[in-house]
Length: 358
Ligand code: SF4
Image (cartoon, rainbow, N blue to C red):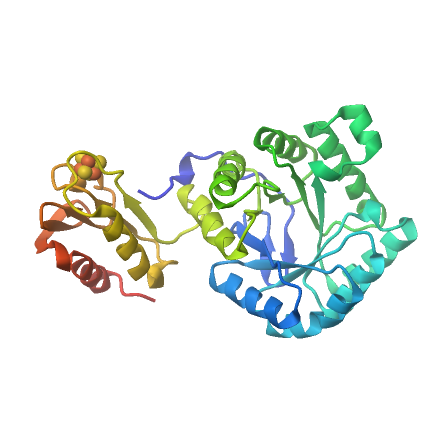
């Protein structure tokens, strides 16, 4: 059964910004972001293409020096999705990125050297209608906020609001905000508080979440909790490792809440009744169904014929294993009995017949 978004808290009302052709906020589909970890231009282009193919709607690229800023036109020309330049401290890098044509900036205006420099960046961003993400991290809070609040939701939110004020004072409202921490309850509490204070779209993420296993759990809990409460407009799952793992995890979070359509595979956990190699079967089904990734169907792979079809009643298609053979079913109705070796092929034929691959 796909996520029941009708059972979630209605989405929070926000302003809407446009990042290239991707709308964010005001009820727009929740977009998925990731970030490249390459330094060489050709490798960055290849990774952006791979991230887009993996389901990223937007990709962020670190711009640590003028060399990268100068490579941006080449990167932008090849990128199939909008690109955000990630800038720290140097407003000249922000200006160069804007001139190159980036679709978004990630930059904290309080850290780029004063009001004049903020105004300069805002003027260049406004001219090109480029939104700015203010991204506050618990690990880099100002000393005075730490002294006053400690590492708390208040400190994260006050830091974000101080940066917001700088952009607002420069007359700019095209922004989205993030208040990330590696601690899940702290992240969730900070976003909840921020959501009460501003109507800008929010970029959700748990930062430094860790390697794939731990990072996906922390991100799913943190991002998922907030999304279920109607908070959040664009998300990034941050993992230590190959960024190509991030988009499928993000899609999974959205899909499980019913906030994005797409293929859902449900598989039983197996038990003493399982008489079939369910892990192999599920992996085979998952691999063969890749072309249906964006199609809104649910496919069940169940370990026994006693409970399988019933447990997967809500699935559109499914197989349930027996001893050397299994059942093929569609919306809870048994369609055929098939030898184990032909189960996956038969399932694919059934799906193709009713829901052709796009
Ligand atoms: S579907 Fe069958 S094999 Fe799988 S967990 Fe349920 S009872 Fe066990």
